[in-house]
Length: 119
Image (cartoon, rainbow, N blue to C red; front, side, top):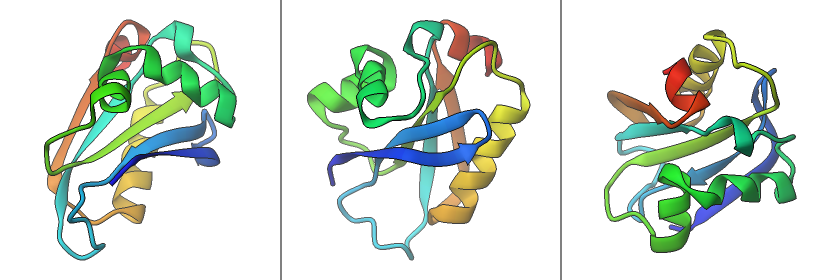
C-alpha cells in the first residue's frame, strides 16, 4: 500500500497530521506490529499537506517515501506542532494507533534529533 498523508488528522493536541504506511496485506483484521517515528525539530509543522512534506527529508518517513517499505508493519509518522514535545505526546500517539489500527502487542518507537530525545 502507498505511504498516505493524513493531513489535518489530529492524533493528540500536539499532532496535526501524520504519514501512514500500511502493509499490502492489511485488511483491518490481521494484527501487525507498529513502528512510530518521531521527527526532529526542523520538521515541525501544522500537519497540513504541505507541512507534512517536511517529514520526507530523512529518517523512517524519508526512507519509506523514497524507497518504500518491505516489512509487514503499520508505520505512523506524526508531525508535532512546535516546541519541545511533552512525554504525553508519545502515549497519545500510541493510544491513537491502538484505537485506529489492527495491531499486535509490538509497538516500536524511533526518532532522531528532537524526536529521539522524547523516545
